[in-house]
Image (cartoon, rainbow, N blue to C red; front, top):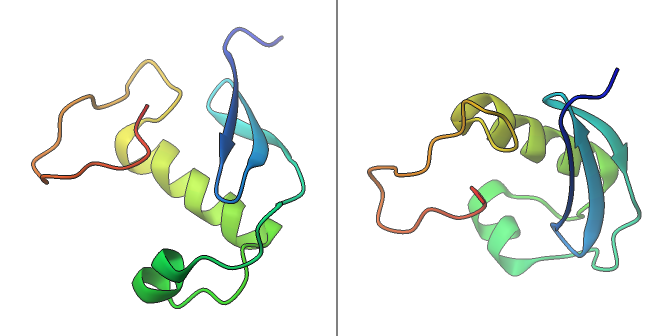
Length: 82
Protein backbone atom coordinates (compact mmCIF):
# COMPACT_ATOMS: atom_id res chain seq x y z
CA UNK A 1 0.00 0.00 0.00
CA UNK A 2 1.32 3.43 -0.95
CA UNK A 3 1.24 5.74 2.04
CA UNK A 4 3.70 8.38 0.84
CA UNK A 5 3.96 9.38 -2.85
CA UNK A 6 6.12 12.10 -4.39
CA UNK A 7 6.28 13.03 -8.06
CA UNK A 8 9.26 15.24 -8.86
CA UNK A 9 10.90 16.67 -11.96
CA UNK A 10 14.68 16.54 -11.80
CA UNK A 11 17.94 15.94 -13.70
CA UNK A 12 17.05 16.98 -17.22
CA UNK A 13 13.32 17.40 -16.64
CA UNK A 14 12.87 13.73 -15.77
CA UNK A 15 9.67 12.67 -14.00
CA UNK A 16 10.60 10.53 -11.00
CA UNK A 17 8.05 8.88 -8.72
CA UNK A 18 9.08 8.00 -5.16
CA UNK A 19 6.69 5.89 -3.08
CA UNK A 20 7.39 5.05 0.55
CA UNK A 21 11.02 6.14 0.12
CA UNK A 22 11.66 3.97 -2.97
CA UNK A 23 11.92 4.98 -6.64
CA UNK A 24 9.04 3.37 -8.52
CA UNK A 25 9.28 5.21 -11.84
CA UNK A 26 11.90 7.09 -13.87
CA UNK A 27 10.78 8.87 -17.02
CA UNK A 28 12.74 9.82 -20.11
CA UNK A 29 15.23 12.69 -19.86
CA UNK A 30 14.71 15.69 -22.13
CA UNK A 31 18.35 16.60 -21.59
CA UNK A 32 21.17 14.13 -22.15
CA UNK A 33 24.17 16.18 -21.01
CA UNK A 34 24.76 18.63 -18.16
CA UNK A 35 28.09 20.46 -17.80
CA UNK A 36 27.62 20.71 -14.01
CA UNK A 37 27.12 16.96 -13.55
CA UNK A 38 29.95 16.28 -15.96
CA UNK A 39 32.29 18.49 -13.91
CA UNK A 40 31.12 17.18 -10.53
CA UNK A 41 30.54 13.48 -11.28
CA UNK A 42 32.24 12.86 -14.66
CA UNK A 43 28.85 11.91 -16.12
CA UNK A 44 28.64 12.03 -19.91
CA UNK A 45 24.93 11.17 -20.18
CA UNK A 46 21.95 11.73 -17.91
CA UNK A 47 20.54 8.23 -18.36
CA UNK A 48 18.20 6.18 -16.17
CA UNK A 49 21.06 4.44 -14.35
CA UNK A 50 22.68 7.73 -13.27
CA UNK A 51 19.31 9.28 -12.37
CA UNK A 52 18.38 6.31 -10.14
CA UNK A 53 21.80 6.38 -8.48
CA UNK A 54 21.60 10.14 -7.87
CA UNK A 55 18.06 10.14 -6.49
CA UNK A 56 18.78 7.08 -4.31
CA UNK A 57 21.78 8.96 -2.89
CA UNK A 58 19.50 11.92 -2.03
CA UNK A 59 16.97 9.61 -0.38
CA UNK A 60 19.60 7.73 1.65
CA UNK A 61 21.91 10.64 2.48
CA UNK A 62 19.46 13.36 3.51
CA UNK A 63 16.07 11.70 3.43
CA UNK A 64 14.63 13.47 0.39
CA UNK A 65 10.91 12.67 0.07
CA UNK A 66 10.83 10.88 3.42
CA UNK A 67 9.73 11.92 6.91
CA UNK A 68 13.44 11.78 7.89
CA UNK A 69 14.48 14.54 5.48
CA UNK A 70 17.18 16.97 6.56
CA UNK A 71 16.09 20.56 5.99
CA UNK A 72 19.26 22.43 6.97
CA UNK A 73 22.77 21.29 6.12
CA UNK A 74 26.25 22.65 6.81
CA UNK A 75 27.14 23.51 3.21
CA UNK A 76 26.34 26.95 1.81
CA UNK A 77 24.44 25.75 -1.25
CA UNK A 78 22.28 22.73 -0.66
CA UNK A 79 20.86 21.55 -3.98
CA UNK A 80 17.99 19.14 -4.46
CA UNK A 81 16.64 18.69 -0.93
CA UNK A 82 13.16 20.01 -1.44
